[in-house]
Image (cartoon, rainbow, N blue to C red; front, side):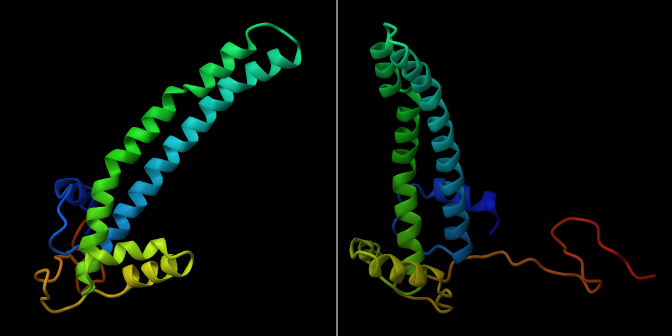
Length: 166
């Protein structure tokens, strides 16, 4: 499964907690979530600095208007964008995690293991990194993955130039 296939799959199964998710689908989704939240967090931080710096300078110079600038920083619109995006990603993230646990032969309730400090997070990562269960289990047939096939010349059949022997 490719990066964009994983995103399409996670949003397509927005709140589907049944079935299975391949390891690649889960980790591509986690990368997407990390990158988008990281970008929005960076933009939020930069807008926060842009709003607070004038207030700090005005306050340092005893100029009026410092309070208004601080209130503007507190009600930074990027904060609401970041919160809205995080809420929008919550259900698909939880759903793909539950489906990934299903793929390893575990119940989705294993997601609650993260509430055990430190050990729970380590165990959860170990469980999510495991190989998929090759046989059908309680939650269905194995997750569909699309392996990259290679030609006899060693090139990929999924795109890119392939050297041909003459």
